[in-house]
Amino acid sequence: MRSGNSDRGKGIAFAAAVAVLAAVGVYLTMSSPSGSSPADDEQAREQSVVATSRATTAAREPSPVATTPGAFDVYAYLPLSRQEIGAAADLARRFTEAYGTFSVDEDPAARADRLTRFATDEFAGQLTRTVTDPAVVDQTEADGVTSRGSAKVTTIRDMTASQVTFVVDSVRHVTDKNGQKDVPERFAVTVIKAGADWRVYDLQLADAGQEGDTSP
Image (cartoon, rainbow, N blue to C red; front, side, top):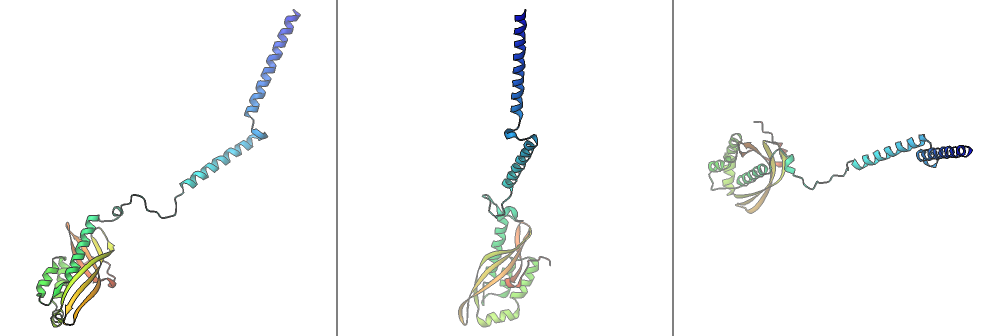
């Protein structure tokens, strides 16, 4: 009897020892390393979150340096398509060449008719008055002038969905009683939409600062 009681006592003591060791192991596992407190652990976690947030924000911060994207279609940002701008520019160029081309032998009315085919009704009247002006005609005849114009569109000064003002460089290759010479000129030529086509609305010397206003 005494021997049985002694064995049970040893078993109970052993079980108690195992329980104590297990509790100690759990405590050591859950406790902070290097003797840090729970408050220290919480502070460390907060600092880690802040650092991660700052790193993410820095990574997403847009660059202030202007760069061109790999695929950039400038016409997507303009009120007119590539084809529309090209057609308008070609009309401005051809009109300017025609304006600079005339001769002493050409009838002023025929010259006016040739130019007004490019123009709106409002501008056609102005063109006719200009090229048939008696003073202009007399001077051309007196000097025996023959002029051949060439032109090149250089820049776009203004653009909306219904009009474009181009800066056009022109050279008139002139032959008159004094010989031959080249006369360079720079014009601001405004063209406006006329249905599916374009018409010249105005012609001014570029230095005049024309803004392309289409108000009659």
